[in-house]
Image (cartoon, rainbow, N blue to C red; front, side, top):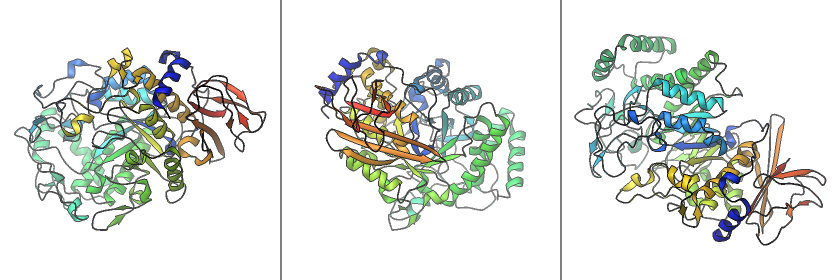
Length: 557
């Protein structure tokens, strides 16, 4: 597909993003996780809804480039939910980084001062970090999403605490190990070790009884909640029969966020660095909490009585591996059999460099073969992948086509849809991936490469809404119908409900062409192109639409 021609055709056909037709269906097909579009955002980097909470715990603006808090918060996410930003993109679920209270101070190693803006440096798993907001803010976020049929995933960490600083003491030795550092030669040197220096590793292998860390006890006493927290822990251990070992404290604390706020699933962090069975137990505890929340909040739950969902960040896993993840050294683990419904697919960014048909057909074969009954979460870039598909956003339309039309689940990383460039002058390493959301560029339709940002988002939104309405896109069986222009079909059936779609990519812009749909739609049926909003009748096994566009997204009207 020629991107310069695509840019021109988009602008000629539709003008600005505000001119896009309303393609939201009156009633879509039922939601299935296998077709989910998940929007992943770093809460601190997305939208600042309350500038009053920008500085908490004495934190300062003294971090290295892009390694401090920038003001994004829970209220900012809620604001965008209520504005309909995620609805317009066809988003099914929002994944937020851990909102738990982070270490208060900064580390000062290698890249300069760094704060825990990302959420992965926990100090207290039972509190919301004040830089992000408070309990009321989090209730409003989840409730606002659920009111729009959007699920919310919570990022959880079972592997490590935050780094140790003069203000943030190390947890007791029976809770964490502080050495050796992982060497990744085999499973043992990946699990029974610290990820990096000064990142204490939870003793998730231990069954020994441990008492609450003294620093946590002192904190809860100061906050006036020590009696409530200890009573809840006593009830949990009595009810479950689990030993008072570190991993079960963590499971209780993570599940409490589900029971209190109604999170619909977990994205589990650093999965390969803990014992596999930890996650199966977490799934059991969190699932019970989810059912408790649904019973207590029948008016707030999302339609469809689906069970608790979990996806795994097992670094290096590829859809090509099927159900197995293999450590260096040869040990293989089936994480789908250890509590996970989905695995994040780390090979997508590289696989997307091939053509559409090899990408789509190979993913469909895997998902409807070795992976039948489970799924993968595809992504093209993220907060810590140093090899994104298109860091400088030179091919944002192609990126949308490959991510949102690939078989499997789709993870939009905040700013994918607005061509947020993954480079910051003066930043080092993964800080380049974590700039603040480019709202001003979207508002002003700033040009990034060949495209205006608003046109890029418009293209992503058209594909996203189509995907949201049609589970066949991500969950269906793929088959190519024509090589040039490239046309394929997807067909899906589950619990007596069927869905069929045809998609054409790289359509010529100098003439209207007939698109083959035989075997999917019958002559005389009226179908709609979700990209333009136009309808047409099938004749001779083909259909053609009056308005030219580079993409056609075809389904029964």
